[in-house]
Length: 537
Image (cartoon, rainbow, N blue to C red):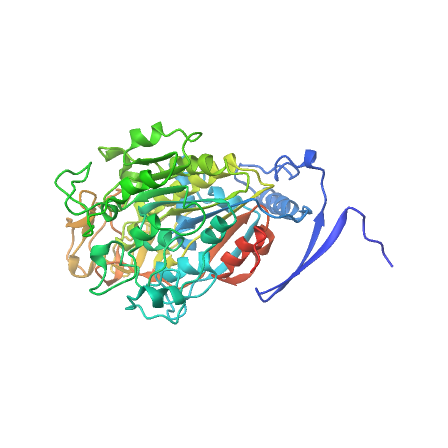
């Protein structure tokens, strides 16, 4: 019988995921593992220019993946990055756009998380939807179950109209963040959307309807607490250490003027100012609402940080510089969060959401969806710089996709936001008109009857745009489709573009990342994180 090398061990994981994994692991001395990439073959960043070079590049990629799997170990920290609406086509187009904007070969470019060692498909169908909304998909990731549309960390047996606190509690499912707080870990959530929006809310709230963000949104006779209130009355551990995003109006009373927009007031009818309550109930705490205050936060002395930078959602990355009060970037918020959370020797759980990728797609505006995806990639890169591969599991995924397509036969290097062209010659459709590489299957960019529109950054609505020609589609010959406000054409006219139902990707690196492989139901993401942290029922 052949002997097993003493440095190698075979690990077989059989569990609730419904599959068996055989893993060959090598025990390396820690001195040889300062970084998980230290023993990888070097990879060229140059684009191959011949068949021989492409062959060698493919051979090198296999050698990278052939490296021995490191000794299996538990994670101290987990960071879950969610690109809301970041389907595979969005990743591909953002990859190309980032490369082209930097003067590189866009097709050969890779976003930060695309360099992770493990990847899988995530099945996003919810308990009652073939194509899901963000509430049940985010619930799946942080609570480990499939839920119904609109549900925030409650199981599928509850009706969306349920307003009883008692019934809601009976159907609530404990989240990974709540379990982390029970263990004495630090926790945080960062988002560019409202902090009470579906994806961030699933971490700390339990409610049947995602729209019940403030008490003024609750139906008459409701005893369940609104989402914003649940953040302040969070019953586990010592509460969230970091809460950064938008949605300030949901935390402020309706008789108090907003600090950035004096003519606007809060949404709360109960008279409570939850921003003041945050600083009064936590020691060493701070509340900030603009960039200067955010920059002044001392992470060494601040243990609980609440930052709400807009009345509703934060600005798109493309428009952030125009905000009068200033807003931190997703990367800056991620860095601040990690520096506060990492002070806890017991570890931390952090969710970071690029929430506005989704909103830009709904608006039919590919430029903002893609530039917000690039911003997410930058935040992931920063997280990798600030953490150790030996003790931090990082997952990057999406809650669902969008009906966003990359079509035609453009030449390599053709501007991804431009018109489809081959060797510089614009191709035409059957009407003899040019068309763009990026389009939507439905949405507000529909141009039937020559009703072309453009995105209006002033109010995030639309304005009528000029067109030429008199055919079924406008003649885009003189239209700058790379303009940030251009809205891509849509096949089916709708007031807002919709989600799509295909699988999305999961990218993973760090302890427990080896479990991310194959095609997984979306709720398995929770179980991967729980397993990596050594959590047991």
